[in-house]
Image 1 (spheres, one colour):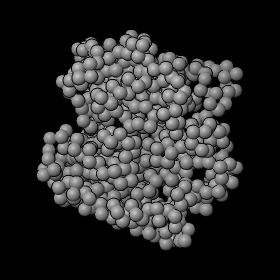
Image 2: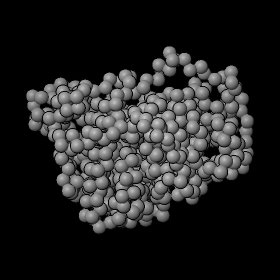
Image 3: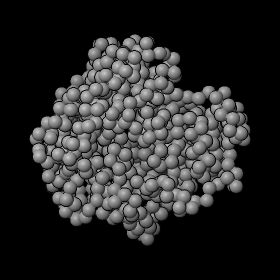
Image 4: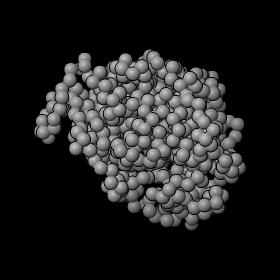
Length: 603
């Protein structure tokens, strides 16, 4: 039975195909449309899905949508009625979209899928299904936290065998995700896009406003339930996240995008990050005690906060955690399909020893013949290398301080590049973070890079050894790898804290000595594993930089042509397309003219 899951019409639209409970395909529409967080119906991803799996629309037995539109519409109307006449502007802005498009989602999907049968699942049920069903656990606590689904903003429950049960929820407008997004907005980043920037900025500040947040903005009870003080927010009423009362609470207006980051922004980032971590820990402790399990699965946008996730492990809240790699709305497409197979149709589930997500390499791939045809059609000079020799060649370039774009295998599902659409660099280099941020990614210099490490060597370089295959856990660099800072270096504050060399692997060591770890094993990621092994043989270090293959403001590349364009338009040194290597000469490098860089906005 072929079940097609769809998420669309809010952000991060995606499709997923599940056959008899097996995940065959999943991809976001943004990778095809090249619009970051594309919310439109995923026509292109659907077409690629059918082509990759080798089925037609006539062979799709069931379509499942990741939320219930009329329940969401009920929330919109009820919220307006509760707060009327305030909120009139946002209500007027929202209504044309609903009457033109969102109330007719069923009809729209039927048209796009040749009148296949359609079912609808609640938003947080789709999140919960995406977290539990692919996990390796027979029994686990389920926690889903996001901005808002239909009414729910947080749900707690239990997964056992082939069934999930969600028995507690917090409802809009009280939302931990929207609280964090309010600070994202206030510090000048884009809501639903810049939350990870806020998380990355937090270590530069001091959580001096944490008590003010606890006293005025959120009340958390011992069981993890919470309420927001809505008089400080505007997201339920207007077109902004916060209001003037919020401004007065922190003594300043919101930072305008493209303007310098203020000390206030750093301290607010540190403060809300701490409050988020504390609240998530309280919620999870209660959820796990309630279902009597030491195993946890997470989904929803807040589950992408890898600092909070790492804290759960290090504080012993859970012995094992599995987080849906596409934890946001994109993962809802996969959850919807899995929910229908296991929960609705009651089919048995046998948990895979690792998980059933196949390393999250669920998109399409390009053959060697297709890549060769592209290179020759564009008259691009290349070297073809045997698979046996390729890891050594790539590792040598990285060890020579080259920045390498790696394009291989099936595309990752979710926001993280995991070695199939990645840009790689030498983590031992003190300059590599700054070089890659400014010359390759064209993004803020404070942004940290993630390390990829051989799974079997992780404990030598980081302070925790729980697998982090999907780059969703933050650990500290092992104390034995750290460098003692001088008094002058310790006295630095703000963005100046970026300057000192803090460890043997400084390019991936954040200013608080943390790192968002990506553990790599031979089973799910053989070529990338071999590259890390080859780099270790050359240098004695099994750690390299891994960042997504894109520039700021663009989705991760999907095709060889997009990889080539990104390579050509940045100061990347080497491009690896499967077993083809393209090198850039000195004459091809781009002068980093400030006027040219303006095409890549800071926020």
